[in-house]
Image (cartoon, rainbow, N blue to C red):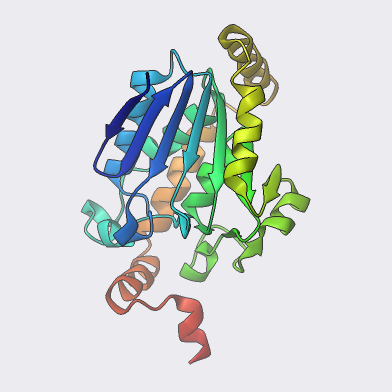
Length: 237
């Protein structure tokens, strides 16, 4: 019998060795706030030892649209501590389970971080992926949304379909037959092959803090929060 748990920002169900974590902030475009990070971590704390597969999914219209700038604008010293999100993504990538991103609708910025952290990415054909950060003054060069087809060609998406829920079910028929011990060994091996440099975490966190403490970037974020218009729209006006 499955176990269903409702948190503030996510919906969680565990059944048959499969943990499903659904981002559920419909009035905030499924953006990432401190509560969502903490609740995803708590869901893993509860079920990681028994889960063979962990699925992250959003809503039909949006998987995850990145940082919650409204919360960010109220954060002390101009930025939130980036460590919990970094550690969550690392846990998704290296944990003793197969992590699957089921992507429908729009995915932006930090949402792409969740996607990239997963072992397997399954997408709806109409899904889009974007990294808009440089338009706020930081981090990445690619700013335009790309299709699931392009994301598949680039290696971000493993498979896509008009009926992504059916695609996910077909994969689960195989993934749920994997033994837990085999999954654990495989993930340990893959983590050893692709281990990050010792200073990777410190460098990533330092870069994030530098970005969000920059007054110019803070100004762009606040203008977006208060006016609702991202910088690329302002450039066209």
